[in-house]
Image (cartoon, rainbow, N blue to C red):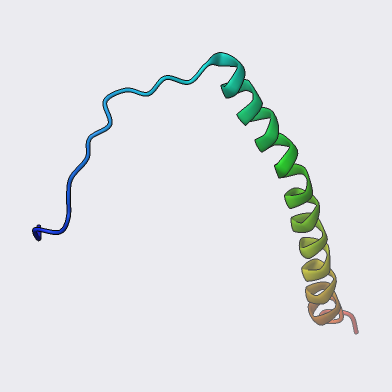
Length: 59
């Protein structure tokens, strides 16, 4: 460890229950658009792969 770095150990922090609930609510609300984007990207990928590989095996 060089002289310019400093180690810090956090032993405790105080968060009120209300602030913790608000953090979880905001996280849940932020996850909704993220899931919508992931579903759209998954549908596009499934469509592309289905178009590429869906034609194989049909004579």
